[in-house]
Length: 345
Image 1 (cartoon, rainbow, N blue to C red):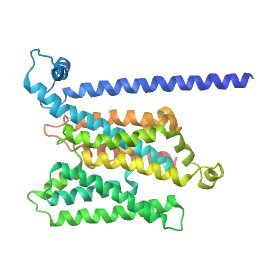
Image 2: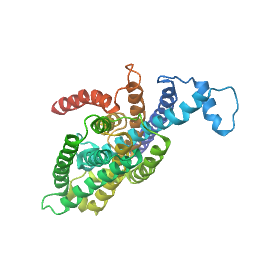
Image 3: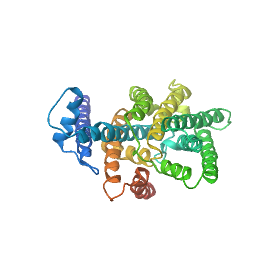
Image 4: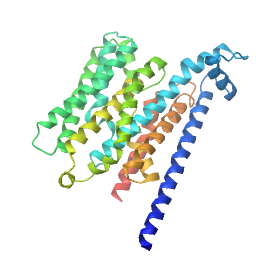
């Protein structure tokens, strides 16, 4: 009886600590997003931010028109995009790490980033508008994952191994396609556009492009958040999970579809932004543990805050803006080395 009471007390303490941690993450995320309006060639003070926001709702105080334009047309879509992309990649990464029972897995394991790159590169080569490039990237990413999944279904090996192998094959094929497009592209114009897109950036983000990608991201996040505790079951061996009466194939497909929505939407909005889906779940795991009921919300919060912060670094560390994908890679590579050394130990 004393033991049961002790366990209940301990569980209550863990739950309380987790709630406070999530609340702290939410406050920090909000603070980072507000402070991000200061960063850039034209800093906006907190008062200007509030006045620019209220200007859409009838406020008629003394405020510069440039401040209103910068707030609504440049900073707000960029900051919201960074937060959503960070959350989407982090949640997709944590889901795949649990599903494949491998802590070194990232969201592009099934070829979503490579497929999106091929779609975007082809659209840029054809002289398409930004909206069409975004749609082509989304279509390419989802098609690559669909191909990986359908081919793996025909394999005689375990589906987890088959998915990884077919994902690697699709990735290599799409990368070859991107290389071919870069080879035939006009080096004075088209090649530069493709290279810039592949480096990852939020420079051209607008409220329209954000709204287009936010829908699939919200759907993917909602599905994974609602079913997140079932990811714990996918971390079990397949035979053990089946003995518990769990339909592994169905849940794996649901999580692959949801994670693909997240990853493809993130890539089509911001280009290739690597390492977020690998790093952030590890940071969240060190704070809240390996239970996916707690890990998924923590990953979303941390991912959003981390990418907003990295975008601030990208547009403030030098006089010229750095590509966001380059900044996340510079931060991610040492972290990956640390993970490998830690695993060996």
